[in-house]
Image (cartoon, rainbow, N blue to C red; front, side, top):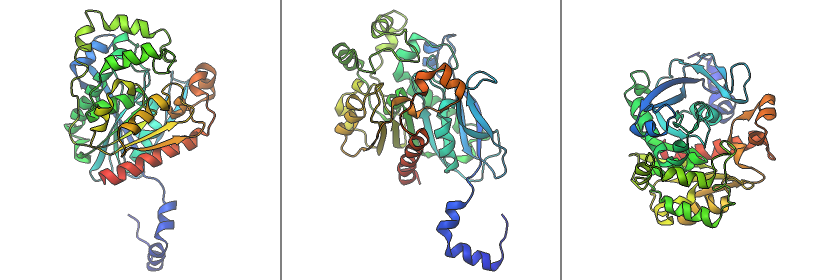
Length: 360
């Protein structure tokens, strides 16, 4: 710490709010690990039980950050923030957030959010969900057995808690959940809401054009009918039969959702019984997980939910920033009508408001 002359100390006290506002942001570190869970083997293309996870955390001052990008080496499609690889952690024990990406996404894709919360004094653990991430081969099982994504979060949490380098800096008693899109469904399951997939099936049969029921841009060949056929196979049927199991992660104290999807899988009574503070941000123009059949259902089931609807914002506005090459190659995921930086900032601000209140 650098000592200041007496007069400067007095000025910093008099103008503390201003000094805080212009102070440089803390550095962010990034590290990676592997956890294991049996259900991963049912979803992964190679039947591995491994779950990769990424950790962003407050780093010691002076850590040299590098840009975080998503895409082929030398040809990034997305820019996801900045962090210092394996930098020493800043002193202290920090609240912990578990982060679940969307269908076909990745931990790194959510780096814009994870690094921002790490800069604000949180340890953020984001997983690559087996069979349903943008790094590995997508599988039908990975896209169908969505409730098992909660297992991935639980496995990553357990791994971080015994990690000799990370565990001294993590306070797992101050635990929050974050999910985007299908990750919102994941976070609700991890918070204790038990899905009834027959509800979602019935909804999609009645409303086949709803964005949740239609093939997704990340995997356009996986139609509703193909999902139904795969779910009935001998390989997946036993896993599907356990979908309503309670997969609650203990000690969760707050849940933050961005554009949550597949909410029709939950009975409103299941959503209403969640006791943790819940905050939702969604785009008014979201056609993939329409607010009327997703976020609004959560708010109607639980009158305590804080919900913010952002004008002109679509579903993919919550992805990382696209590069020029990304706009050329994955245009649908890069098309926005609103200011993406403002959308990200609104989500970060709302998440901080929730977690600073519940976990500090």
